[in-house]
Image (cartoon, rainbow over the protein chains, first blue to last red):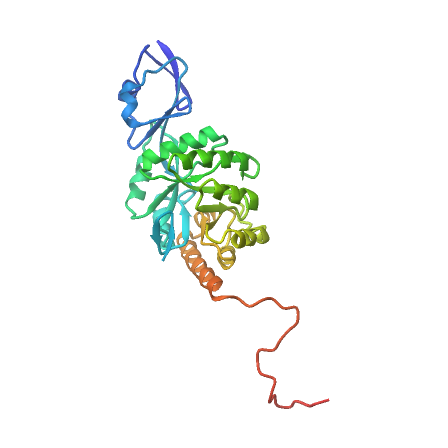
Length: 66
Length: 259
């Protein structure tokens, strides 16, 4: 197992977990967008990205703003 | 009609979607404002609630242009990544670029803003930079590819109006072909009138409407204020004088005695 940070909270996943696997587990509500370690990840790459120890994943949604 | 970022619009009022007492009041206020551009943000999704999805569903019911912001970003990297996420999420290359340099008054970081602007323009974004009213910064943002500038009237949420009308007037004079939008610090419709009288192309505000006792009526008030200011600016106002000058003809005044 390895530790990752998802939206600021620590979480554990198995080694070599793909980003798509994480999303399948967490089932974020659409629409959303993702960044890992401050790098934007396009939708079409979710299945290609392997997560690593201490990765910081941001899953963001539309929100009100000024 | 006027044109901004390739879109022809009727309204010169850009409105925010935050701080309303309820989602329905937000919706009603946006409708009352007549705005055709609404600002939104991106925030971490909370797995225990669907507020983001509900908010987006509500806003999507309006036929309106979405202007995502990078609010809360303090570095170029954060702002660029947020803009990239916003482009995918909202399917628009528009971005209201905020790179905050000072937490106390939420003043934009001019150096980070310029760097982020260059990067985002190179990536095909239409950047709406939230900036200070500094002429040199604004000129450099234009050189970087901005066709729109959004200088502050006053710090965000203060409602103090146009703190430095001289600087804003200078921007209008020196950058006649750029769409200038006053963003932030507006508190009253009279402030919006003043900005438009100076020849600004539009006004962006949020708190002054959302935190009013009656946000829907305040949105309507701002709608008319912005329109009135725009018409007045184009109509050509008289110059101030120090001495009084009667408007009623003096010739033929009854009871007039020549000394």
